[in-house]
Amino acid sequence: MKNQVKKKILELKKEKNAVILAHYYAPDEVQELADYIGDSFYLAKIAKKSTADIIVFCGVYFMGESAKILNPDKKVLMPNITADCPMAHMVAEGKIEEMRKKYDDLAVVCYINSTAELKSKSDVCVTSSNAVSIVKSLPNKNIFFIPDKNLGAFVAEQVPEKNIILNDGYCPIHAKISAKEVKAEKEMHPCSLVLTHPECEGDVLAISDYIGSTAEIIDYVKASLCKEFIICTEDGVKFKLKSDNPDKKFYFPTTRPCCADMKLNTLEKLLFALETEENEILIDGKTGEAAIAPLDKMLELAR
Ligand code: 13P
Ligand code: SF4
Image (cartoon, rainbow, N blue to C red; front, side, top):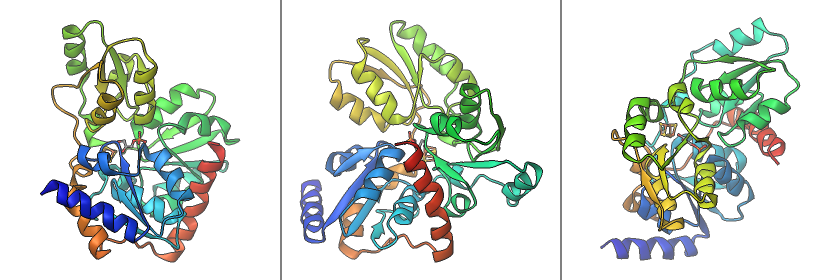
């Protein structure tokens, strides 16, 4: 049955000149079949360069939305249009305007995990793999970092010369990773290294050997001579970690970090999207147009 679904997906993909992009947190079977798998930054770059007529984005809504903003003339579909990132909405109404009034040299730096509307009100977007270097490169002293307070605090620590104003958003999946559970894993596996996504809380970051985006964690493991790792990010990364490093061991906190929204991207839903071309991402013209500049600025500054 699964093989039939996969066969049909591959046939339709060819017939319709579609490309399948999957985030590292998507289910294993979807990552296995995708043309490109990666972190938010890599997938945004691929979406921008794509020559396909249809982009099927196996991730959460803000990722598909970013692909659409960068490709307004292309059809962008999602296997499940309800797959959303709760953090993407976590900026209180009127907060950006309030901050702009308070600081006249303010730069609003918007983590890509945000709605198109928030992006459209921002100066530049960032992802977890380029936030530090982009914030460093801005001429502004005052930075309002939205929506993630944890990534914002991590950036503030790396770029002490800036005044970084934090917002109260967070990723419920990464915020649930507790330092106590990480320490317990470390006691059980004393030779392991702790690798952590910057969306985790400060006390987890403080006991980590390395902090990076999902792609940076994957690259770190590949290059490391160490054989055991405690992974503090969503458990979907295990697919790539295992396939790249069959000889290495990976441990996760006991309360398994699993993003239910990312797991809505099943093979069956992917087939449905390709067959019906439903679940199309549509963005209202004005918002989409205003959101292009901050995304393009990110791609340019990160080059
Ligand atoms: P990356 O930027 O590392 O892909 O992370 C995306 C994400 O949703 C993290 O929770
Ligand atoms: Fe959003 Fe967190 Fe899921 Fe990433 S893991 S998509 S930040 S809820």
